[in-house]
Length: 240
Image 1: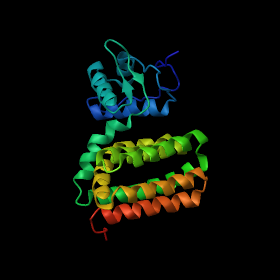
Image 2: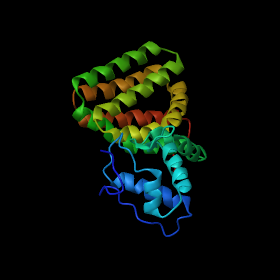
Image 3: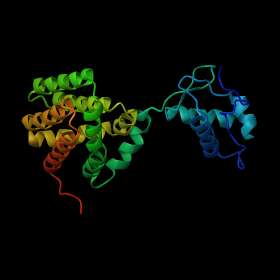
């Protein structure tokens, strides 16, 4: 049964300033995230939400549209909104604009990658199944087959890191990396032009081999080496 306003999970409080759209958005978002909703669950109707919050249905409708743009809910013509797991792509555009405005955009990105992907590689080595290791190996084949085709090599490189995230069994890694996709491709385009395909394949092979052996320390070292080489080939000076 879908949640209603009598459902104990729906803990929304009346707003002190019901005219504020942001307050409505935050109240509904908090209720969804703290209410134990599962993907596919129907949200309370616009009328129920409006009554509980003490606001108009128009404001609730606008708030739902914002939450849909964020990937938190989905709606259809004449249907109540449903909860959906957050879509990482929903934040990619503003994040891309934010980082691209930085003087050191690609270096900033690399610092974030070091913080995330080194441990991601170690967890992949610890948790990867035989099937996931096989998929990672197929991506290595794709990288070699790309040869000097830079576009194909970049896409194969991206798939490798996506499948490495799969190996961790932790969906948060996808949520963190997906919004960075465009910048990651831009970074790879610059570094691969400088380093060449052979260097890239060698770096990724070392990561693959460590994961296949379930050697966490080796996976960490291989990822650090890979990112250090990427830094050298970005053609930018390290930040102070």
